[in-house]
Length: 275
Image (cartoon, rainbow, N blue to C red; front, side, top):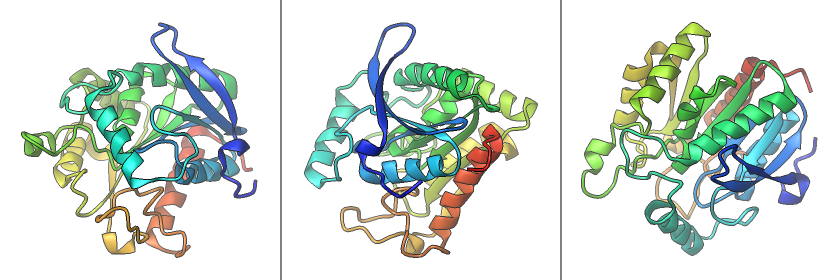
């Protein structure tokens, strides 16, 4: 598979959850077991599609739901700010400030995972959330088909504003979801990956410490040195591990090794065949 990661290289379909609460577009590519790539702020931008294309090239079917922002559009600072404000303050699908419950849209994502597994087969489904959606992969584990969860720079609940320090140690999922995830990790011999850059104010170290305490040794936290990030003039700190700050110019560098590890994790856990 070539590195054409334009939106036109994907096939779009609309998915409605069984309860009929939401219908959202989903962009699909590849063949083999399913991996759900849940985009970050400000939307389903080209660098998210680049990562998804690389997962597909490794022998898996990627499903990229479009939850907010403009699909396929380059990141622009002003439009990104508007998307973030709407996502945090207005849209009822997301719980940006809640410390002990997941966002309602996770129910829709669980239903998508179930359908994707039925269609694509394999041992189960991989899922990666990024930034605003980073903790969604943890909450999705109440769906039995999800076997390879990755939390990339999980930024909810927002650790800014009044009470931000307390929220910094919160995971943005319910106690029942945490209990289910830990039980499945142990009973099914699964692991969960977490990714962040050192010094990322949106993902305080207390959050990874809380995940480790709640989930035990089967949560593997990967912390990268910000000096290894790709330079980016739009952000003053390294944040987006698999997209904006992935240093493609250093193919043997730490960020590329993490990308390779995540893709290998999906392949191994979903039992994807060699491409």
